[in-house]
Length: 447
Image (cartoon, rainbow, N blue to C red; front, side, top):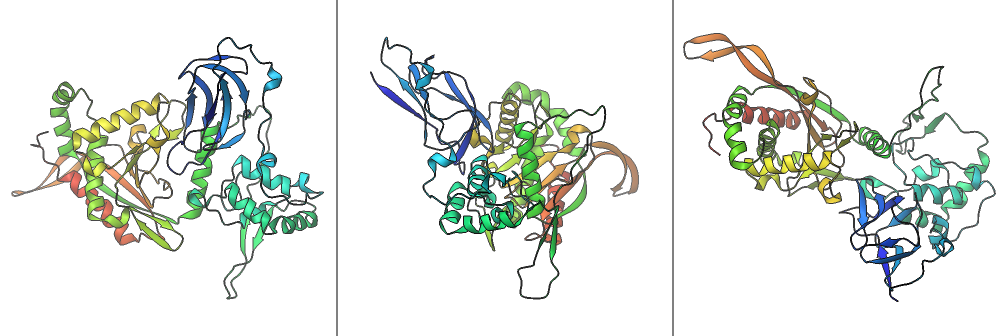
């Protein structure tokens, strides 16, 4: 009888852990090769993991809501023929944060009273594993906020908090927790600079009362992740938004002329999105300092141009699949990528890699009839462009024979950017260049 270890596979770049959200098989159940075994969720996407062997599930090493590191064994499948089904008592106990810790620290008598929210006052997100360790070791939110995270977007990882404990941080946290009888509504943080700056006040969200007739609806997991990411982005980047109105009449008329033959030839519907993305890619080539990220006091200039496209899901949530190396694709190639990613997003078929690695994001608020918007930057990027609705508008048309009034198709482009590294000149010139490419579109273009 052979026993096969089922490990949590790599879930995409920068993803180091996942949460078990649902076991699709119980101990003693027969499992077929490639049959879905367990559902897991990362901070990027949800996935079903298929079984890597045919046999009987004999052990589950983690339970629902446990956080698992990539490469860890999550289950054991016996491939021995005719083996009796093991009793449920064979199920291994889940590996909690306490069981997997490699650093021991003296437990605080007040540790059980320390509560750590998933979001700190700074907007940082803390994973269930980090919160569990913090609670056990009596580490307060103020102490947790002071830990320098090495994870994506400066998130505090298991390694970070264990290093903090090993260096004596937990004892300091215990003293802090003991001295605090009641939680403070307002946290006052002294500025770290040597000048006489006034203290910086950070306010926690107020308690919200419920009134008669109100209904309490818990956010689903994806909505919580979106909320965490948006708060973190606004805290990280000072947002500035520039607006440009673009005349896209040539594009509207060209698409109307070409869309039927395009569908017949390429078996793909031609929407406006690929045309807009093509113009954005051209503008990024002209202004490469839009295609960057910030790491501490350093700027990372991205070689690849990977365009994220915000996509609304049937649930009302939002996901951002990424067109990789968009600068290497022609309009047909971009169209195929846009349609494929949008279809897989709507049907929950995106892989973790499909939503990673973006360097610039586009969101189409015009889909909902909005003429413009103030989009929030998709960290760790530094800019995002919102595409407004295309509307017929009266406009002054300059001709060799003088000005005249005509009906034109126009739209607003709303460009939000990180003012730490993108000033108004660059941010404004970039969106103006996108508009120029759209307005100069060749109506006689051949595919």
